[in-house]
Length: 534
Image 1 (cartoon, rainbow, N blue to C red):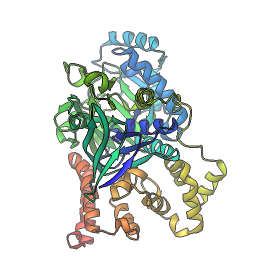
Image 2 (tube, rainbow, N blue to C red; image 1 turned 60 degrees about the vertical axis):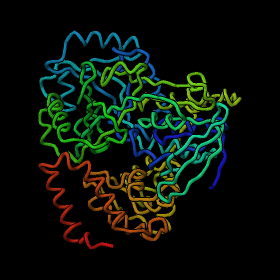
Image 3 (cartoon, rainbow, N blue to C red; image 1 turned 90 degrees about the vertical axis):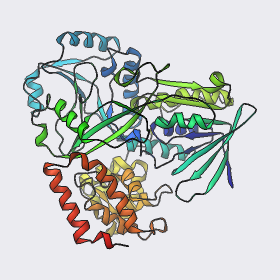
Image 4 (cartoon, rainbow, N blue to C red; image 1 turned 120 degrees about the vertical axis):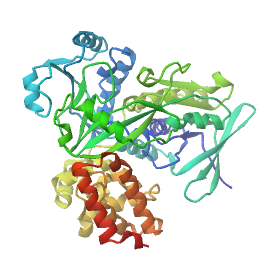
């Protein structure tokens, strides 16, 4: 069996796990991150993309509201290419308790948030899609955040300081001796190869799977698995994040992202951490609630629904659903269970992932005798793209194409521009919806973590636009054929990619989306004869 050695193994490739890896690396602690799938395939990319201002939590949890506000400011500073600072609104509609408004305003002010009331007519002029029955509206510093970019920004930053990642690798055993962790045994999900990684500490940042990981160490950790479903529309319905001004509930947030808008979310406790199948009944419920703010909501095309499982932690497990705290918990199993070198970080929100990582690494660093302070709040994930480079990019990819590629690629944008300048054939746009060029696809395909079309999608957004991969997936597959890693069964590659797209399309299959699905079926089943493809 192949062996490796590091100080810390991080289990889980979501926002928290990658944030921990970066923090470790910046403090000079060697680390290897192990993820059972691709990075960002789970909960950290299956949310509404809202960078909370804290206003949503102000009434119920002042500490959480302050944490969100502070981390919101930090992420805008260190990850500017991942954040769209569009601002947010809290609006009151008929049926919402008028008395709640004063409580909410006072709670926001106590948390350091300063909600500014605006004229409703001004609001409707800027966002004509909203219903005219809205009675009050307040501005807050919400923003939209791209979870994929943040995760890859964390990883690329950590790599620059020597960290390693292993995707499609499942932890199958946690070894220990005399009450101390000694390493983990892992299995490559693609090849079946096994490997032992010797380490001093294991950090369990596996999200909804945290309980299953703790069980490998012989420990009990109860994580509440809370499924949330969301719907993506192919229009940017409004110019700001819009929240319902009432206690948090289902379907009360609209978040514009680029050219689309996401409506979410639901809340339902499930048993399976991999339960990410959205149901049509959940979509219909979201539409019913969403219409109270956007009366013509059903006239806009829904391109897909998706779901993620929130890993919530409530000491004592005495609550469920919306009643469970969204705070995080850092569990030192040396103190709790007598197992040295094993730490779990559970619960929390995407907005506070960096803080969760900082607290976790503070604990681990102290145990390892490392006294270097955390630098993740000061050092940017990626350097700003120079104007001269952006101008060169505009000449090969066009203005919007260059801008989007620069935001996605960060430090790697220069390499992609250079390749496109040297080989004009790489300037072709393979994904018109998201403006992803062949040069960008070729660049990410060479990353050691790319094994499937889905990996390309998560790194570039290829196939995530309004056509949902109908036109760009087969073009991309053809371009990848020259790489040994993609030289397998092309029908299997394509089928797997399209089936995962179909998983999200099926719950919204009516109206314009049904027509789009019929077009896709005609292309792949009739024109391409996919059943006969080898």
